[in-house]
Length: 258
Ligand code: IPE
Ligand code: IPE
Ligand code: MG
Image: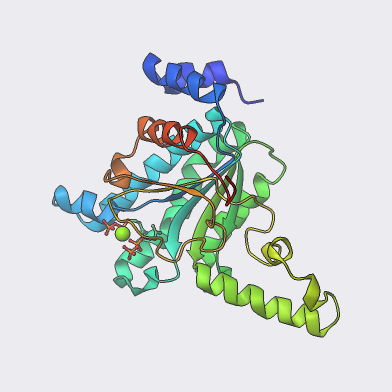
């Protein structure tokens, strides 16, 4: 079992953060938080380092934020790690990004298992290099029975491709009589998306000052609360996540009602 007290003692020394976490838990904690982790390249540039140094630093932040999200009682954390458009980047950068899952999971998988985290992935697996996919599938396999935080990596993910794929499968199922076209509604369509087993994000965070979705969860974010920050992903801390969740707790969600 995940031991909250032990976690605090070993990982988070700041008592003010601990107090904030306790306070957050008295309110409505968002069930699904999605993050567009952006700004790694600019973080590196500011330090005259190669872009990949920013990606490496960003990986450490993934660990920190996963643990904090788990502690807060968030059910699902979706992290946008690589988009279907990111293949346009220089070959060496893409190769580095494709090695990160191995490095991250190679180092932290035992810890994720211990903390009862369940690893999942959304995105097109077919174009991923074998070594990348193997690392992710191994982690998914070894954590499939965990029932703590779902850590969902969006890897080679693009929302438009996801929607087109869903439409194609809907058409197939209509043709073969598995579903009737009159049955199709929001709920049924959602079952054809890669997120079929997940709730829609309650809160979307994007770092680095960009105010756009970059082809991320276009369907699923229809009624999510958005929170943007200028902080670059490698500089993102537990305190920033607490800021976002506190802001979320002060929002009034109406879903079209009054
Ligand atoms: C986010 O950081 C990581 C990925 C998109 C893989 P960037 O690499 O986009 O960093 P910037 O936006 O160039 O600073
Ligand atoms: C979005 O960031 C993709 C990820 C964070 C993985 P980008 O840096 O690729 O987005 P744009 O190009 O600035 O829109
Ligand atoms: Mg970027």
